[in-house]
Every structure is written in C-alpha cells, then in structure tokens.
Image (cartoon, rainbow, N blue to C red; front, side, top):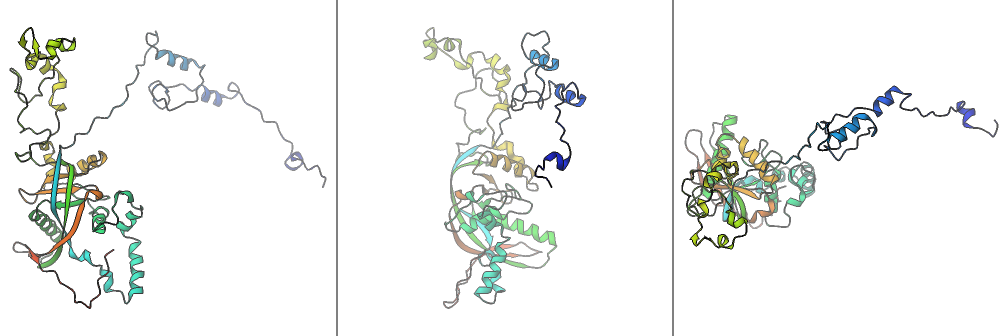
Length: 407
C-alpha cells in the first residue's frame, strides 16, 4: 500500500463544503427573517432583557418593532409592560412571648428501641441497627439526604436532640394543622391539660378509623420545652396581652375625627403649610390657633382608596378559618406562607380544649431546654370517657444494663 494514504484514497474525493446563503436556502431564509411577535416575552428583548433572539436586525419587522417602542413614533403600537410585583402576604400578627414548661406528650415506646427484643447479642444488635438506620428518616435528614429539611436546621450535641429532630423528620403522612407531610413541627401545649386533650382526641380518631372496641392502656412521656422570641399569634387579644399589632380591641391613640366613618383607617393627611415648610404648621400652630390635624381634608381622605381596610394590618380574626376543628386545608396553606416568610412558629388556640393554647415551632434550634419529665398513662374505653393520669416510672434493678437508645 503506498505511503501517501490520503483521505481521498480512503473515503473518496473530498467535496468542498459550500456555505449556503439565506437567499439560496428557503428554510434558512425563513429562519433568519422569522417575524417577531411584539407581545411575546420569549421573543421580544424589550419585554425580556435576558434573551437574545436570533433575528435579522435589518429585517423590516425588527425595525418597526424598535420604532414602535419609541414614544411619539407614528407607528407606535406597543406600550411598555410594567414589571410584575407580587402582592405581599398577609400573615397573622406577631407577639413577643416567653413560654416556659410547655408540654409535649410522646408514646413511651419511643424511649426504648424495639429492636433489642429480637437481637441475640450485641453484634447481632449492631447489624440490625445498621439495617434500620438505612431507612430512618431522622438519620437521613441528619445526613442531609431528606427532602423538606436540611441538616443545617437540625440540632446536634444538645439534650434530647434526637427527640427534637424526630419531631421535624417524622411528620404525619397527611400532615397536621401547621405542618406538611414532608416537614413536621414541634407541637406542644402551653398547658399540660391542653396537651392531654390533644392526645386524647387524636388517639380516639385513630381507634375509630380501625374500629377498635377494646379497652387500651398506653404510656406517654412528658417532654417540656421553653420558647422565647417573636412568634405569629392567632390568639384573640386580651388585656393581659395588649401589644398585639393589628388588634381591633386596642384603645385608639387619637380620637376619631368628626365626620369620619367607623371601621375605616384614620386619614393620613399632610397640611399645606407643612408641605411648604411653614414652621408654624410644624409646631402645631397656624395663625395663632391650634392646628387640628384630623380636621384637614377629612372628606378627601375618606374618598381616597388607599385608606381602605385592605391596607389595615392583619388581625387574628382574619385567620379564624385556620382553626377549623375538622379541616387542616387552610392552616397548612398558612404554614407554607409562614415558612416562606421565615416565621419561627405560631401560637394558636386549641381546637380540642376551650381556653387552652398550643404552639407549633417551625425551627428545631428554637426548641430550648428540652427535658424528660413525668410518665402518664392513658386508659381508653370504647363505652366511657378516657382517663389520663400520672403513673410511676419503673426503675430497673441495679444489675440490669441500660437499654440501647432508640434509633
């Protein structure tokens, strides 16, 4: 075989690549001179500066498009589209709270792993734990392998950190009042009686779903926690809590001006003398007389649509539908809005105990000073009222090894 083994000898004669022009190729011409829809944001750079459509700048339709955006042009037919500004979310009012010794009741079976009952020895137990850890949502979240919550939000090396993280990583499959199926929350009763009422209700619902008609005894561990900070508040305003913003029961700072309609915002009017720099108007006096701020242009201020109730601060009464005893639809949507706004949590009246209050904390790091307290036994009966009483905690013998922690 000769040494001159060129491409031509191997694959045949090489044909020169011809560069087709737009005029010779009808498809290329149609693509190059494709008309631009002036109202399509995907094609119009004036509506979407982030795109760069491949159009011919010398095409007549492109020239007319740029000319139409110029004010005063005889062919102007397109007005600039204003930027989209999302409406601000209306969230419940915020309260500065300091709640100590709130109660959360958890089944006592979570305090000790059930895997210890099926293990023959310690080596076998460690292998069983390894299999369980592969599907444990809490451990997956701590390894940043679970959707809905990141490992940076969880707590580590803190008392009862496993219990805290489990509240956020083991949510109910259908969610709860202020939590979703993919992210839980720390629920607690401000009062111990409220926590008992909540547990009694949900346990009765579970028994009714499966048609359980036998007496049952269940043990619950009480975990107490403290909360301090700014939380959204759905509780009705009371004299003991006069600082709720947006409360309709707060005494007005200034009296209602004569002729003003009740239920409308006080008119915010600037006097002409203040706007023009009159010092006498700034000092509250005009021509030697007191300047009545509320008497200035009351009628015009009441007709101003900006003074409508839509601009008034939100109140807890607006979110009463989120406390429905038989539906979590509205409350879960509110929880999504609160999480997007960075809310630490929400305080709300209990739907199971009149006069009781609950707290749902959205951030694991805000669940402070968690400690395990008393043991309570729930005695449930299908034909009479259930009881929830304190029970003595069993103390293991001195020679009994400590149980392994639950996973």
